[in-house]
Length: 270
Image (cartoon, rainbow, N blue to C red):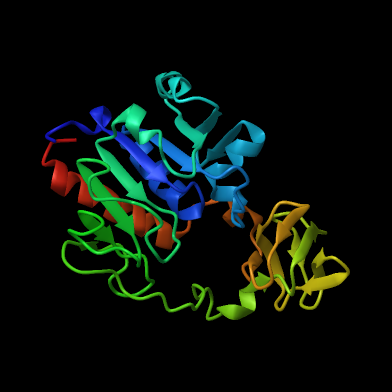
């Protein structure tokens, strides 16, 4: 490609916590970034997820703002304001309008949901579900191991361990899951303090209780219909509300890996 970063058009599939961290890094680096999402995204870590712009019009994460657009033509207007564009486009058809230099699959579905290696000059997959030179040109490791953020140029990423990220030695204890299908009713807000055993939300008439004390770091939007077993919230034992709005260290490493991959394959100066 041999383009400067501020000339690169980057399309990211998935505006949840991971895709947003990558978008933030690339926007800071000067890239023109567009995120695609579903009509009703179900992000838990809404404090750092740009998909919230679909509901609220705009979303700021650590000084970088994303703005919702209803048509592809508006994307260029958003970029002119030095913002990230967010569009409802589950199949990322906007790629045929933007002709991105880089396409990144950050859906985190643990499988390929439709990304093709010819979608852009450089196609990057995040985490498991992709194979280099079949689905994507390169993969960035997302498993929290010694390989986190590594640029993979052969084969596949590490398998999903299905174990939540350990924070202070806690894994499953931090996570709130839906006990059944139903409507999620939140009784707390992101950043609120909770005690162990306290009811954080309801699913119908079933309480969802905190397994540890701390703060509500992540929580689904109120009145969301969910399926049994779905993650609906997260408690962090570090009782500092400000961390709810800071990009996690793990995600910064992943975003750094994506930027490294772009620089390697673009072979151009910043």
